[in-house]
Amino acid sequence: MAKILVIDLGTSWFKFALFDRAGQLCGLVQREPSIRRPEVGHVELAADDFVPVIAEQWVRLGQVFRPDPRRHRLYQELQSNAPV
Image (cartoon, rainbow, N blue to C red; front, side):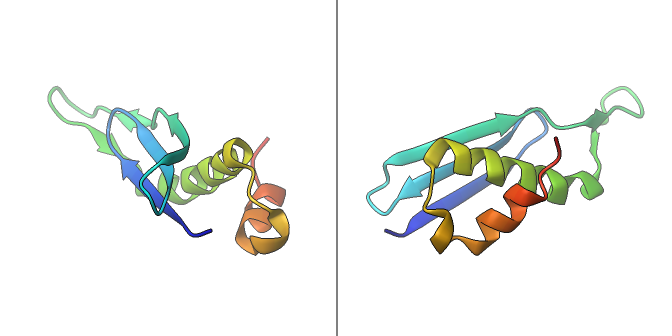
């Protein structure tokens, strides 16, 4: 069954949600991003952090949802390369 992945890369939380076609939530994971505050009133997120965090959270979401790994090659690749 097809799923919809929603990614919200905000300054408070990086959120990753998986929905089915009926709009039912199948899995949700979130992580606080690494934030730099170079001066008062300024917040910076390192763009270089996005890809590793997305890969890490994809693996976590897969652990919550438990897709059939034989049908998800990307899931297998990310899981085998996930940081410990």
